[in-house]
Length: 213
Image (cartoon, rainbow, N blue to C red; front, side):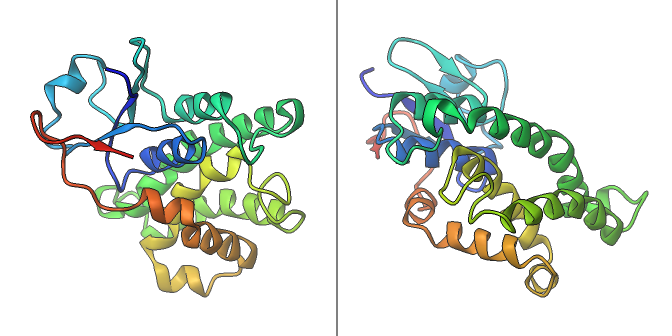
């Protein structure tokens, strides 16, 4: 094994941010697209969690958290200075990601799957999600991106989840009063970085020609 292996699932927001960071950092990987209903034994052998993404390095190091993969990737090579001078954006990004990955992600799941959570209506869950969207809108009223006028690791960390939020009710989102978030989101969706990493790949199978990207 000479190339890092990324076990991934194309539509997973955690995988999206990990893959985007690896791509931007110029780190060549073997991509193993998995079907979540049938987790390959090779993945189970290196991770006690049946989730993706998982990054396995040639030296045996294994990362099972997507934000760890993002930060590891930019620590290897940060061509667009996502961390900022002296890692000035790292702490603020960590704080934003903590809110995104815990409270917002929980609220987003309730909004997406409101039929599984009949305690409240889908609109009620959306309104709760909007607290985080409003926070992002405030940040984007001051900067082109979340922490700066240039992309930082915070944008890559949050973007895939806001994309999911926008797709739950696309008509509502497109007419909502969040012009900053709308413009920011569309710019990232249209970026070569996202389009390159969102390409479809066949599910990985042992013995089949590997996919290096």
